[in-house]
Length: 215
Image (cartoon, rainbow, N blue to C red; front, side, top):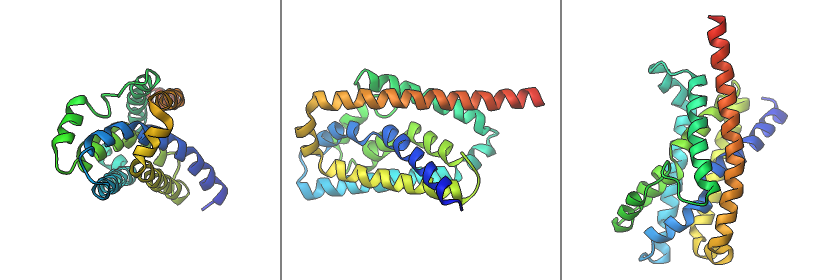
């Protein structure tokens, strides 16, 4: 395994996954669904949510292409679909509003009423939503072998470790950044995510075009 290539891929995966998982954007929802919980229980909710969402992304990054292959879906087509999905999320982030491709107001309201909202809506679909799954799968398929698989999985683990720290410190994060600060960060990350989405679509379209012209 080429260490330099693996490190370069890790440095590509880390910001891409962090932006689409968007733990900072999950802070207001986390505070809402754990508003009546004692600190110890809220930390447990954050830990379970990150463990479940991280495990989901690792599973789909390792086996997702095989699963979609059973349905005859090519990686190129999935790149385009994933890019379009990321663009919808990016546009919502640029407008600093909750993205309904990640979670809806109804899911958040249901989570408030649940004894344990760690799985739904926090892990799925807020942290480990369709956009995050698509991003993990595309990044895993960037190249063959452990050179790309290991840094992708390590990036997922790093992102969810950071997500856990941010969620368990959510009260402090919101107090420091305030609503306006969170909105500014959302817009900046949305702009970066839009660029990633365009690249996904461009790569997928190029692969589809080559497959058509060579057939």
